[in-house]
Amino acid sequence: MSGATNTGVLEVKSIAASDDLTGAFEEFMTTFEAFKRENDQRLREIERRSADPLTQEKVERLSAALDEQKRLIDRLGLKKARPALGGEMTVSPVALEHKDAFHAYLRSGDDRQLRAIEAKAMSYGSPQDGGYLVPEELEAEIGRRLAAISPIRSIASVRQVSSAVLKKPFAISGPATGWVGETAQRSQTATPTLDELSFPTAELYAMPAATATLLEDSVVDLDAWIAGEIETAFAEQEGAAFVDGDGNNKPLGFLSYEQVEDTSWSWGKVGYRATGRDGALPQNDPADILIDLVYALKAGYRQNASWVMNRRTQAALRKIKDKDGNYLWQPPTTPGARAMLMGFPVVEAEDMPDIASDATPIAFGDFQRGYLVVDRAGVRVLRDPYSSKPYVLFYTTKRVGGGIQNFEAIKLLKFGTE
Image 1 (cartoon, helix red, strand yellow):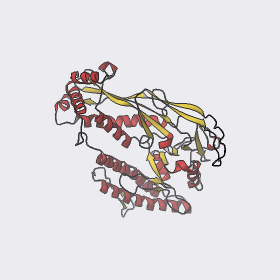
Image 2: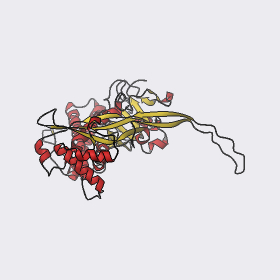
Image 3: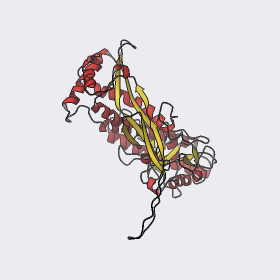
Image 4: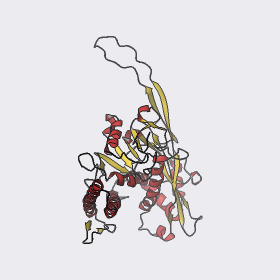
């Protein structure tokens, strides 16, 4: 909550200690209303002469408070929506045996049951191969958590495979088509020209540590502990790779493909629109270039499109109005929803670049059709009680790949003159 004191100094109430999702959302909306009032005042001052430094400071503090409060709402929403592991779901005897064997391995290092289970399943897994497969329930929970907190994964297509590389064919030129009468002779269609996209998976790892006391405590839910320890590490690493990974032992990020001006776009490249101003939005009517970017995308992709940017870029766009005086950026309508920019949801990805000369800090597109995340089935854990005594390390790995699967579905905004 925010308000002005008699001395004109703005105070922003912190909600960091709040655990109430509804209350946090109300604070967020109150802060946004205060932000709009102060930013309106700033714009009026700019029109008259120049913005008062105190007004500018208020706007920046409120904008920072909005970012902080939105992150808190996201955390509370994720915590509330997170399903409990080991609930009342029906578990098969085989799955229950695997889970008990896995817990015995985590707590004491006894892997006899796990070796027997993987031998019966003809699994290639062994300690020499990088540990043992986690139970399916835990693997599914890790996937759900990553989908909730990994920004690009949350809007991209996700496919699980059993091999190291996914190869996806696509048609460069489709078959001949046309209109024909009901009884007229049909001409033979042309053979389509096919090419292939390749999505190799690379190993992603995390190494949470536990004390002997934690492992000996039978009340501790080890599945939930493992999932909680690795979710943030995995999400941060793969989130960065999905944005600008170079494809070298990691996914290929959508910013790492060749970028061309949209009028010169061709398959295999990512099209962009330039702002026409080096390192900045156009000085007059900055909303127009965002409209141009929206309509650079074909109608079929706009229906499910999202903006992708980091919080600093979002803070800059939050201050912009259209020609009718309406703010382009709007807060989420309910807790857990996304903020909206010109009617399209905003996905906050901290690995997107900041606004700078010739940078592309804003992406817009249908990422579900445009970007593909490939998960190789199986998450593995290797128990290591030796490397960091008295702690026990759990070397946890999964294989992930990614890349653009439809180059028409993603467009960028370049902060440059051409």
